[in-house]
Length: 198
Image 1 (tube, one colour):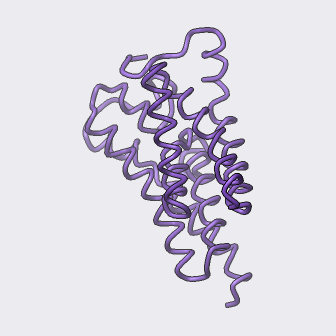
Image 2 (image 1 turned 30 degrees about the vertical axis):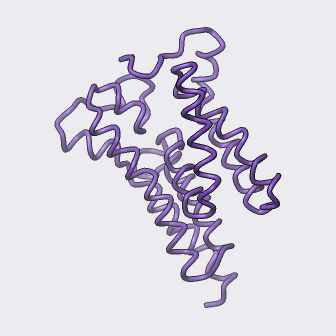
Image 3 (image 1 turned 180 degrees about the vertical axis):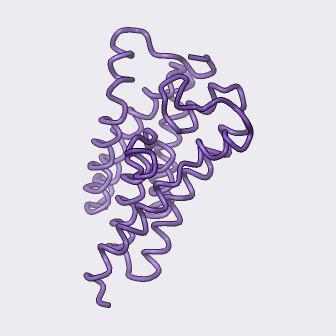
């Protein structure tokens, strides 16, 4: 199979890995309530945190990030950087729109971080620093993700990584779409802060 022919396979690999709903699986194994019935209804780490189980939220964050990283590394090892980027896109879409959950998934922040880690780790560091700085000053998880995701493609473009900048511009648009209800609540002053149970 040629490298170009492998690109659809890379996308499928990424999608399948990205669609694993670790937040839902871990909370069900721990016997908590269905996280889709609380808070934002998302399956991601921020919503898992609303169960009061910090360890489950941390595990969800880790595994959701790693599924993005693993997808990128597998595809990159087999067929190079183009396949790695396609797999990263697939993983992100798989998390947002998992076929197993009627295409209702998470918001994508952890997977965004994981894909960054696999493709260009300094970008991941910048994203995390921006997230932490915004979270420290505002205590809004959603706003922190939006700020970090907005700046990340600019950072990549500024340092000459044009293909990565284009990919993460697309991921950022998808992330903003996934956070559209959060954006409305932020504008209305009704968004929950980090640590609050919604």
